[in-house]
Length: 175
Ligand SMILES: O=C(O)CCC(=O)C(=O)O
Ligand SMILES: [Fe+2]
Image 1 (cartoon, rainbow, N blue to C red):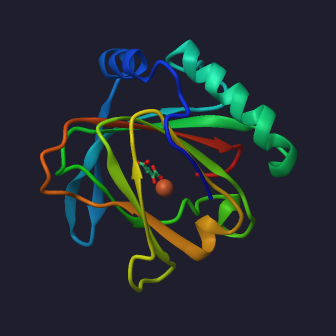
Image 2 (cartoon, rainbow, N blue to C red; image 1 turned 30 degrees about the vertical axis):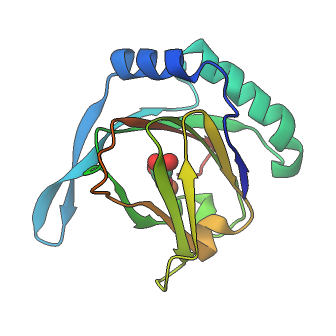
């Protein structure tokens, strides 16, 4: 795992522009016998779709020039999440759809806006072993077997927090 606090320059403007211009979607998921609202807003940019801001293209190019040699391929997709306040969250999971279920990979996250913790525990449960406070402009890159052998979450918080945007760059076939 790499964590580079304040990696992205121009985070204020990028946050405002993404918050205002991305077509954020509220989604629902079936959980057991109920349909529940996903507690965050989402937007997904497939490989063949232009990113919503030129600064994200630059960020992806910078990430690819550093990480693609080790990863063996480029980051191509971008998932965006908007956490409106401390009630929004993402539950424990690994990004294990597709190839990442069986292969090592990398997921790079650019965090914008109010700080939230990204928490880690071993897959299947157990105590939280790491809490990374992700601040405005921070980059975190999860590599190796992180998606298969660990779980991550953005827990809800009762702290008064404003909105946060997460941009996740992933290689082809990893979700
Ligand atoms: O908000 C984040 O930075 C994490 C989001 C996440 O884990 C995911 O979308 O898979
Ligand atoms: Fe994730």
